[in-house]
Image 1: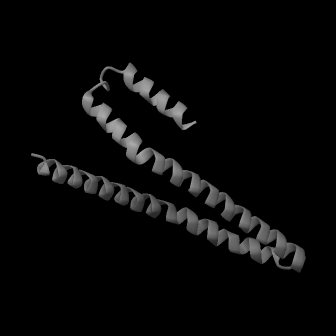
Image 2: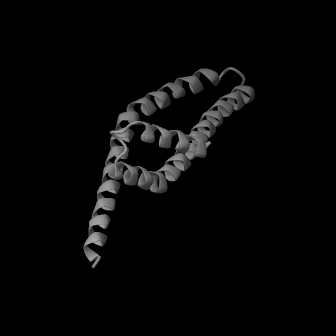
Image 3: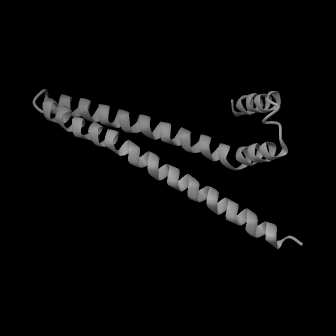
Length: 121
């Protein structure tokens, strides 16, 4: 699957003459070598973790309902509302912090690039 995506992206870059520069080629190859695997790996872990949390909550509510019958179900559902609300409110903060981390990572990579470039004879 990853190979197909990379081939498709490569064809897109070859098809547009504005993108067919040496700088874009190097930038794309650096991204593929350095970022793509980590991005796919983290995205898959995040997806699996999200499904696990959702199923954990669902099965916990089902277990409480079976054990306590229907007496505890309203309180469980009442507690689910603040949890969902807090996750919704935290989304912009998570987005902001992830952008800061990415920009710091890029800045650090650029500093290493220039530091190593200056060391060459």
